[in-house]
Each structure stands twice: as C-alpha cells, then as structure tokens.
Image: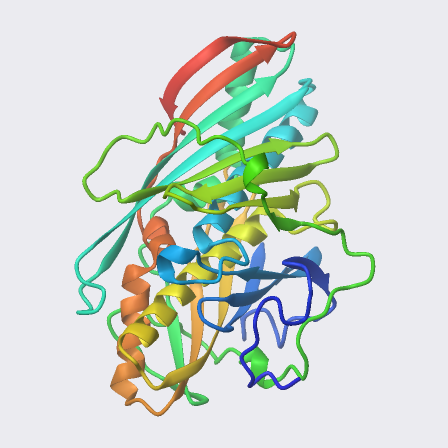
Length: 398
C-alpha cells in the first residue's frame, strides 16, 4: 500500500497499539547525542485520525493511533490526544512510586491514582488569534500499605521529584523549537523558536510500507470501554479559573507486575472512555507512560493543524512530523524542550504553510502545558487493612 494514500485507523484491522519492528529513520537527532531521547514519527490519516511510531533507547518501537470524538467531528475510534497525556502522566508517576517503594522497603498493596487536567481556549481560532491554555492538574493518590503516614508522604514527594512526566508539567519550557519543510525543502520559521542543526529525515519518504504488529504483541493495550462498564467521573478538585473550558479525567491502577491501566475520558456529555495499558517495569509488553506523553504532544499539535486546514480550506496535505522529547529520571527528574520537525505538502503559498505552523503551535494545549509552570495539587489517601484512613492531605506537588 502506498503511503501517499490516506487510510483509516480501522482499515487494516490492526489493534490501536502494538509493538512494531520498524526502526527509526536515521540518527536520533542529526549531529547530536541526547540522553533519554524519545522520537515520535507521526502522520495524519483520514479526518482527525493520526498514527505515531514512538521509539527510544532501551525499549521497543510502538505504533499508536489517535482520533477525536464528535465534538470535533471525529470518528471516535481511538483515544483523543489529551487522554493519552492524562494516562501517560499518571502511569509514569505510578511506576516511580512502585520503584521507589521497592528501594525503600515499603510494602505497597495497591496504587490507585485519579488525575484531572484542565484546558481552555481564548481568542479566535479562524482569525489566527487563538491561544491554548492549561492549568495545574489535580492528583488524588490512594496507597494501600501497612506503612505509616510519614513514610508514605515522603515516598509520594520523592516520586513526584523522580517523575519526568511531572517535571514536564512543573518546569516551564519557554523555547520549544520548530523546523518547517515545504514540499521537501526546509524553510525558515517565524513567530516560534527555530531548530538548529541539520535537517531531520522525513520518515514517510523512506518507509515503503505501513507499520505492522510484531508476532506475540500483547492484545488490547488500548480499547474503548463499554458504556455499562465505565467508571464514574470523580469530583474535580481543580481551582476554578475563567480560562478553563473543560476537564480531562483519568482513573488508574498499578498492578503487581508493573503494568499500569488507566481509564480516561473528556469531561463533556456523551464522551467515550478509553482504557490504556502501559508497562512501567520493562517497557516491552506495552509502551511506557513517557511514550504516551510524547505521542500525546504530537497528536495534539496535529489536531490543531488539521482543524485549521479543514476550516480554512487550505490546499495543504500529507501532514507529517518528527518530534524529539528528552527526559532525565533520577532523584530530580527533568524534561527538555519539545523539538518538532514539520513536513507540509501542497499548492498553498509558502507564507500560508508558515502561518499554519505558528497558529498550531499557539493553539496546541500540550505545548501550552509545556510552556507553563503547572504545579499539581496532590491529595494523598492511605488505605490500611482494607479501610480508608489516615491521610487526607491537600498540597502542591514539590
């Protein structure tokens, strides 16, 4: 099948997430070496559907797909970008909690997390004055453990510090650079920081076939939840702010084998729920939380591109990108700038292509989240001997 043909998520009958043998094209970043690098190769499919290959050192390459619901006239076949982000954050945090508990000799019978993210929009999307916004999320963490309150508080504080996903929220990344390629040729950008160094390779000019599942891939890593089995919406604990228009909810749990399962949904009527599983222990049975976070950013940015192309009837297509995310784990985790190489093709004027890149960068909710300093509020609950007790602690994440 030619990659010039825009296919649908369900065209090949593949699962929504699977391991793929397709290796990244070229070096991770031309002429550079980075620690904890995640590479995302993404392309637009039909409508608001997107496909991404997420790869990095030390784990398999994973193919993930995203879609939008009825609010944006999507087909609702796969999770929306902000749902990937919600699931990835809490999965990464849950994995850090488990790992630190083992190091400290703390018994954890269960780890359950509720995460609420808030987003909003100001200005006019079609007039090009729109701005996406994100506010500090709210975390409810419930730990089942015979360990005392003081040790559990210390464990949660350490996990928040050790989580690169939380670091991405907490640290304002003011300069997230972009590179633009129009019909195969690189052009200078304006209105956003520009990537330095050599060109990145457009992967879909190199690949000769669509990604295919590896034999033995764990099934049902991402599924739509039956309405009868949906979890109830938790009470949002976000502080009310005028710019917040909607919330994204996620409820997850960490299994003893290190797999983390999240159910996530958009806080609007009739929104679909999706269940995503990650592997925070080995990252070979499922993508890790940071892979979901990285994919989410590319998916969200591409949604803004497709919305504007569709709304303004631009003669631009074959939208693809390569995105680089860097993370550092340890006692004090960090997240580096988001580097995006965007490939656009079409008959529109060069200024139109450039305008599209800039508008999408300003309206992307997850680029807005990266630019801001979002200190999560954290409420910790202690479940000891099967009872809810102990800690009801409202505080900002440290």
